[in-house]
Image 1 (cartoon, helix red, strand yellow):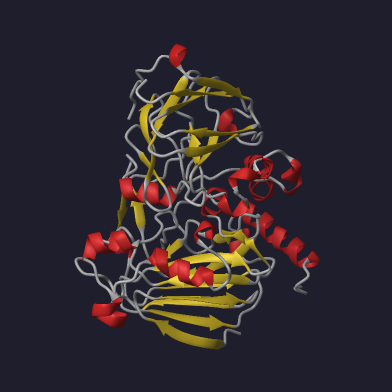
Image 2 (cartoon, one colour; image 1 turned 90 degrees about the vertical axis):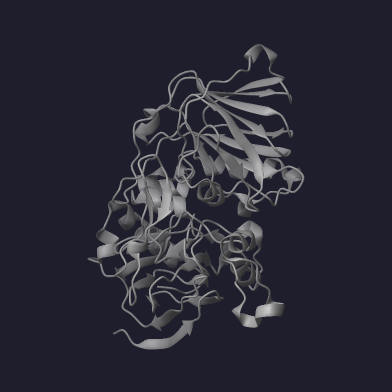
Length: 215
Length: 243
């Protein structure tokens, strides 16, 4: 469901451009609102959430889609943890549909999907592993890297059970916004994938903005 | 060469685990119809290597699992191949029942009142089995739900299609590397049954031949050929002495 935001970028407490291929790891406090902005269109923002007060609790794709009875994420979706507790609610979305079953690219999965020689190409899960290692104070390790959200990606399922990687619904300037119900660690890999037509083989920057409670 | 090494029936609503050797097979049979088998896979040599549903689905461009599909680890290797399947459609995105979901759908029960007829849930079943190997909640991932056909409407609505189940349906997995298997027979979380479905599952461990060069699972997609090559490289350098 497409729903415009009422928030003004000029009043954001925080904004940061995340270059393609970098990770962004940041705490969003309970009540704050995070906007992820697709600056140039059809860029995958591979995103995980952890409870900042108990990082063993994390975003769960399967619990989220099952409890809302729908495979796609959009405005109104409550992002649930593995304990089925609300972590964030998507409050605005100008894209209309985001994927959470396609996962994040890895050097190993690139060998399967594209070619064995692709194993040295930069991948989201390398960014995740670097992020948890460079930020040891959170206590996260590889075992915490669960199944992520692919903001701005469109991965529809056909009636006969095929998975398709359809043309993106996103475009330059489209965004998704979510308000936190608990203090959350956001771990985002701005996808570096060069082998997939979904981003026209050209990874681009995204911007993140945060507003305070009641903004 | 498909000798049965072991056969057992797990009653409905229970959990168990086992380590499958490379090239052995695990055959599951939905004895009465309406069964669900939640299943997770780990590499016993490196428990951080585990079943990855997104990698499995996207590299084979599929939402359902059936004959010819391979089940991948997060390290680009094939834990097992689906060598036969008379059910035709298995889910791997909906996760498990939890204690709260079971209570909401079928009422609260306790061991104190029901003894072993209590209504257990898949999530807690996995926790118990995972803990036997030093694994915990943080190590769980999206599991397979064998015998459960979950369909997706155009708008993304998810539902459990009861036409996907019948008595006697069976699925046979050939393991392409040594694999720790956790499983439970708790109901599918989208079940609309009016009472807690307690459906037994026959599980058989069979000797079997390794995948040949012309194996249908290996050839079902170019991606699977590369997955098998990753397994070959793993076993070539692996300390387990696999060949």
